[in-house]
Length: 320
Image (tube, rainbow, N blue to C red; front, side, top):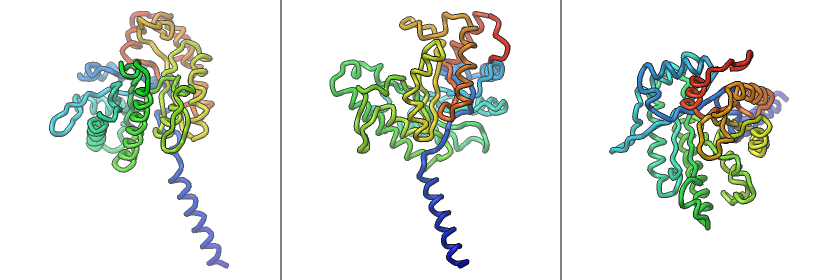
């Protein structure tokens, strides 16, 4: 009897391990707070700049930074401003602020650029291996918007080919990260409209919206849900949120603060600061109540800092 029970227990444990190892990574991503993009290396290239960023984050309760990095290509690609980025990671970590490497170019996921983009990914992995243990450097995020290219806008079969290339790169990147840097997450920024019927496509034998294929291949996505009201933001991310809940992952809605020449109505730039701080806590409350919503991203550090500095207005009590 004891032998039978022991065998049954071992079988149960084995089944649980298989289930857990085969399951999607659940709820990867920054803590459920506010994150922002840092696009310019000049913002963190000096000690004063790094201290300014971190002070700003602490003051406004920002808990995550996506930091854009340039890559120099020689015999082997290396990160530019690597030491400054390392110092920012360590300083931010002292204040419990997580960081990730950010890379972006509309054409970097095209098949003819896969080799170059993969070499750059390995440069980030190599950099991560030089960091002290237990830093709060968490992963890699891509902001790749192929619809900005002339080729996509020309229509025809090109957008589908570009979407196929996009997914093929994510599949390869996921495989490399799992093998070489399993502790780092893989994430992307996406527009909110990639869930539409016109973006249905077949990939790996499955036909579904482009956005769902992307969610399958990443740990989480940030949806560029640039609107000015809580209701409109949540409406923009609803399809992605439902799918994230189904596959036990997270999505992050986001707000825009950049001064826009086109579509200024989607940005908070021209609104009083109080309007932004009304929306932010409401979206954070949604994130706390919904496991599929990971937090909130605000685009971006430079415009947000400029907006708040140039428009000094009272921030209501209880908001960031």
